[in-house]
Length: 101
Image 1 (cartoon, rainbow, N blue to C red):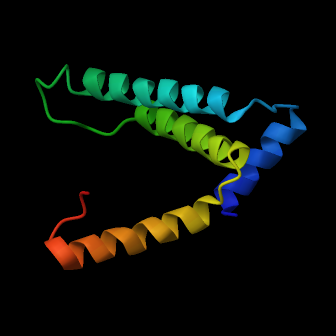
Image 2: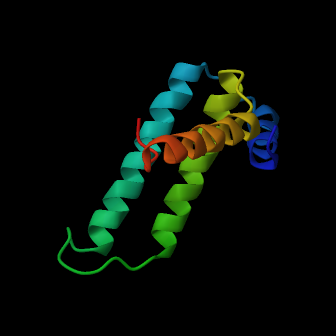
């Protein structure tokens, strides 16, 4: 299990958070929506170039936390899942010149 996933899970356990995967999936989507909103605000809805800011960094941290807990609740080791994904994308790139399915 990745260090991030272990840290998120330990924090959640210390605070008695034990929702099912569905709750974490919705939370992850909600947090990702907040990232999108911050990007819209940072670019004035596409009217100026994107500049990184602390709000986006914080929202991405929230997404990562929620994703780690979703993975733990779904009994998925993110380290293994990520490694498998890189292998899959590498194979696709070699076969077709892109990583999309």
